[in-house]
Image (tube, rainbow, N blue to C red; front, side, top):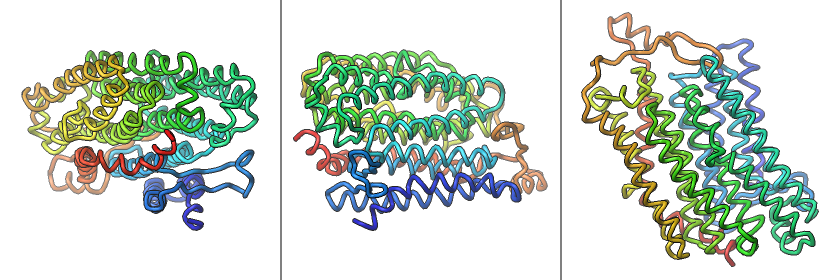
Length: 521
């Protein structure tokens, strides 16, 4: 384990260091950012797989204490059965999205600097072992995301980024205030130390106030209604190559962090005894599930529809955490974890598919998707599979996550939660079916052949689609197409992965068993 634990700080330090290379190399060479990002994320994925192998085969967490200081006041990184699933998701999605940005953009070197900083922050959130450094990595993630959203064209992207900045700053302040209250009551910031210190704290009022602030902070970070307003604008206005990354990972990492704080820091038994803690978390989650699906149904723009869908899906995860607190449900915690991983893969695939359609056709509204299946059968087919998995049709991963959460709610006799899951599934089917009907059963509105947008977005501007392949096509008298084989292939891989993970529900439960046992025993 001694050699493997050294990989933990490298997973965070390497992308931070390599983030400087695109700008430095850009002083002499053009478009070096993609190559640097591709090599870095591929190496991170290999490192994550090595750590995961050690964690899941060794049956115990891999830890690394920076500088050799005691964890009470030092910095500790921890990779266990829960966190490694998120680490694998982050590294896999970050590597896969590059298959789109290689051709579809953004292409600027500064874009890839922010890209790698975002990956570093996400990995830090997943691996940190203390609540203050969790705040630090949340802020690194947020700052990189602000920059990536603002790199879109036009003032709308800047406004969306500013809205995210304001609400994100409020959320971070709320979280940090909660951490300060907990620190005042316990004298430590390490998660494991806090788990022992919180029940014995002499000032429980500070603990309760701290938890309340932390809940509000994460409600904004995870985009829970009515604190969700930053998310639809950010997803819609960000460049098409950015949205799949932030939609799949940013709120997912925050939702993971909230779950980590619940089960590792405050612990289930303590929160179950805290007045109204379970009721508040359940209410926030269930209201977001219903509000998000209703708002998604009435949208006409595809990226915005999928953004409101994320509000609903993350609400389901938060509701599952509420079931864990209220009913000490191991099943609900397994369901929340599966749903986090599955939703990350689904949203990466769906937003990548939407990006491919926008790149080749300029189609961004539901009506403009009419007849897509005829012209782009692989993209339309993959999007159809991803939408059905999102609804919860077996054997997709969306069904498995919902099944475990609903089963946990029923076992805990929380019938309203089960009813909310059923109702949200019907509403999800409503907006998914609307898009499927346009793609497969509605003839094209006016244009039968695909067209290419005049330009492809870069960070802070536009760049003509003048790649060698396009130029060659033009010289042969062919219609240039901004979509590469790799862009389509990554969407197909996401769809196949969403279905394959649906058969792995038992595997997820087995992998999480040591962590679940530690949480509930």
